[in-house]
Length: 168
Image (cartoon, rainbow, N blue to C red; front, top):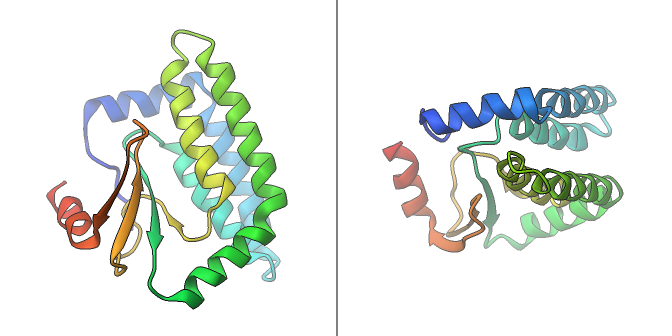
């Protein structure tokens, strides 16, 4: 189940402006369509699910964050690394596209807030395996690296993250 970070009016206004002015609906639709096509192939279903995850974030990026889980389980981490390496040709193209769009948006006064969202999407596009969108599933790992839109990086115990989630 996915929740918006909050019902804050600024998040809703930002998301509406993102859809209307920045073409967020088009970006999300492209991610959803190609993700659905890849899921239909069964063999490429994991990659399709990552595109759908990107589409979910691309539709309503304001008020959401990306969580990269650090696991004590080496096999799980190795699997994520292997899948991200296979994802690399797609990921690099999407990463560079979102970076370019972020730079273009930053050149306009009203686009600066949208450039931050493109940077957030670029991070997820580069290494989607092992990353979780907002409030997806329970976090059982000991540490969670949280990237927010204000570029603060912090490592916090997962119990604090779950407590923070429940407070929204």
